[in-house]
Image 1 (spheres, one colour):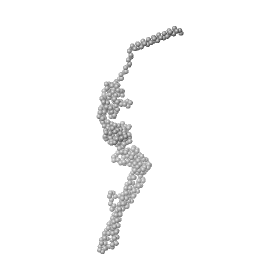
Image 2 (cartoon, helix red, strand yellow; image 1 turned 90 degrees about the vertical axis):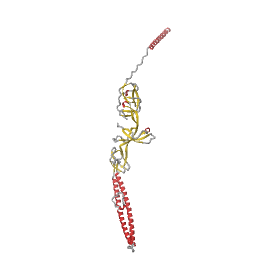
Image 3 (cartoon, rainbow, N blue to C red; image 1 turned 135 degrees about the vertical axis):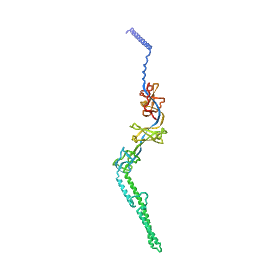
Image 4 (cartoon, rainbow, N blue to C red; image 1 turned 45 degrees about the horizontal axis):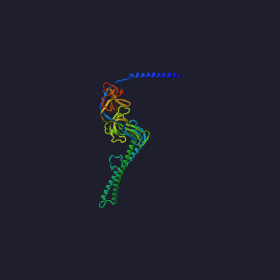
Length: 426
């Protein structure tokens, strides 16, 4: 290519570039002269139809949660009083038995034989004093035949001695001195024999009384071969909570055989925080929620520990519950609430006013046509009403229909107020 041709090509390219720049500048000027386009406005959210109900202000019990254990009114462990082999089982787990009922029997043969031996020993002791049975109350040993015989002999010897004395004192004596001395000696011996007879009678009587005690021990041992429930003064019954022996098993005296529970009335024991100690009194209500049952059990505080546990900063209470229906089982771990006082001005709303999402509860009121959100926590329910821990001051009515569609600031359209389904009562 010649130099002249190259220069023509460069000049032509430059002119093309200048023309293109001019065209772009013109477009830019035209674009700047036009008005900017407006952004689209978002559509307004339609108002949510809601129904309102008034907020009630009423007294409400102040409660504190409690956990604890159920105990029977009385619980007893029955042990064998004598050793032996279990002959029969008369009561088993879950049975109900009355007072003094036979629970189990121990083989009585050995104890029957021992009773017979003790009875014979008593008869032998009684025969030594000439009695068929021991007298009741105070007994005069002079009535024992051997003592009476010795007494008669001593009286006879005394009479003979006194006659001989009168004869011997005659002048001259009508009996010899030797005869008189023999009669005097016989009298002294007879008196000593009477004393000895009384002592022997007292000793034999004491021995017979000892044999009588041995006989009673043997009778009691034979009776104890029947393992019995404790006696009851009324017609209540024990529940057999545990049986620990079996037929054919050899048991020693003191071996645990049964565990019985008196559960017509039960006791609840639980611990409360120290902060409510000043407000709690006997007679206040305790409500327990029973697993698997809709209706709670209601009792009253009967005992309050006077001491605070320094390790837990709690104190123990005991409440009594009527358990005639058998709803409360001794040994059960239960939860409940204890009434410790009353609050005078508590906000109470229908249950339908409370909406819960992600574990947070709230109620809505309406102000200037928009929903206002109020976070709340429920303190208790009664019927269709819920008592709130928050006072929500200034709120006269809350949303009871449509609240599940609301958030704070959403427009609402109110309908006629709906009265609460049930009115709370303090």
